[in-house]
Length: 274
Image (cartoon, rainbow, N blue to C red):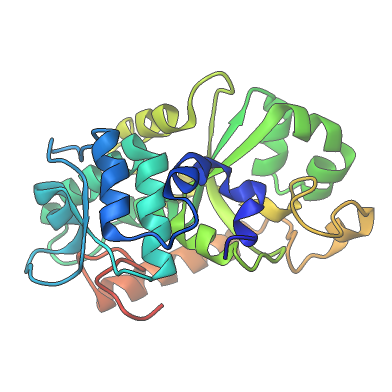
């Protein structure tokens, strides 16, 4: 796994990875980093990574009320979740607080706000960019114009900071179809503080449509072969905009999750599959 972690997609995790060294991460070593940084969840409880089980509260509520993040030792998905907490502590705490506040209002049916939170938590990225034209290209699914015609401009003016732990896990075996749900923040601000502020400003009726799609391995130099123009002609990965398909897909996913579970985030440490 160490060789794969050299990719720029893992740059936000780099300080924690250096501190952890070459030894496999453990709950103790992760907690040492959280303690040294004096990290806390939004309720004020100190952040701790603990083995799953032994608590009847739902995943998000448990974290908010106790500060304890269920983490399966040796599980890559949970390891990247822990590393995301260390790299983006304010953002992760705000995500958790919004989940915990929304759950009592939902009466057993996951709402659209929590769909947004889950998508961002599992597959999100913070895009630091002050170039409005580039942002419009992303929102318009103008992938070749963005990544090829404006290649140097993207390198100079757009930085992608991936925090979604499911995306980070998948990035160990990258492929062009990996797509993040992103927000845009000013380039001069820190990604963690900016993303936390963006989340704090969400209304109760916020929906996943506020997030933009970005095939991150189209970023110049992030995938072998994307130095060729033809790379961006593959519409399996660099798809044109289709609102009907996107809206239907999000709605179907939300309906399926509502039936399957009401409290835990998909991919959380309480779930063994997926």
